[in-house]
Amino acid sequence: MGEIKKLNFYAFAFLFVYLIIVGIHYFTNSVSLNLNQLIVILVSIVILFLSQILLKKRRIINLFIIFYMVVASLISIYGFFHSGSIFSYGPDLGKLLSLVVPIPLFLFFLKDKLKWFYLFSFIILLAGVFASGSRGAFISIISSILLISFIEKKKLKIKRKHIIYSILIIIIFFLIFSGFSFKLLSTFKGNILSDRPEIWLNSFKLIRQKVLFGNGVSLYSYDIYLQILLEAGLVVFVLFLFFLYNLFKISLNKLSKLKRYNYFLLIGLLSGTLSFLILGLIEHSLSGKYFALLFWLNIGLIINLLKNEK
Image (cartoon, rainbow, N blue to C red; front, side, top):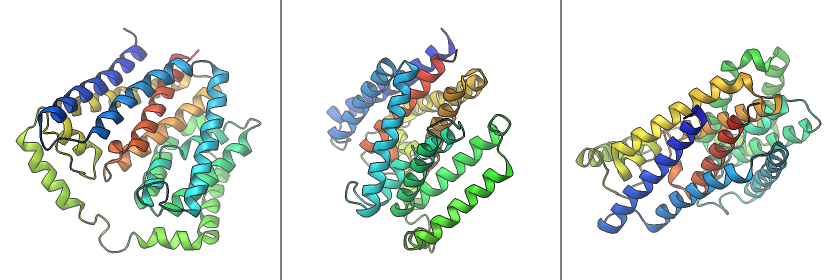
């Protein structure tokens, strides 16, 4: 079995085992998860499958990415003026956009005829993050972009002027959207972690009761990794970590073999995925239907790009 087929197998194995264990908890445990969480996992499997079936050819991927950026930008604009109206509360917009923001930024480096479209999309999406007031999303996006840029600095050929331009864009954002900027900065005052340490401690206590297969408790642990341990136990958690390890290992090894467009799109998708996973350290992002479905869409696109390396 080739590397890509193995990666695909690990992704589906994680989701199917997760679905089975959570399903058992749902039908046998009175304190189990609600039906929506079962549906989210099931639909995630469908999205991962369909994204690989329908988005194979280069032209279709190109058109889809344009559509993807347009829809994400419209959501960002709507959320900018109606913060919290589409989502349960404002920061949810930032969590969702953490998966998308890096994509147009790295595609801008492609310097093709759509580069200004990608730059405009990046600015709109970044404005949505500012408007959301989600400090976690802001930090995770910046961290993932810097980390991926550092890893691929030779191929990206990042120059001093690119760094200066990036700093200027952020400064301009702070000046133009000063109200949102101060809103975002104000969230760093006081107790940044809020009551999360206490929630994490309670989560660990529950996890210790049923380590291997979890207990299906529907408790928002503000950490996707603890959430998986709570819902489905150590078996599913190890599968998830194994999948993530292989995802980044195989992707980084294959990057140099990709065509120019696929290369920049892949590092954008990897950066968005990494941003989401960093944010997952302080949020229960994978349990939300918006976040989980978009996450697995990104994974499907990554696997497709790796399949079409030649």
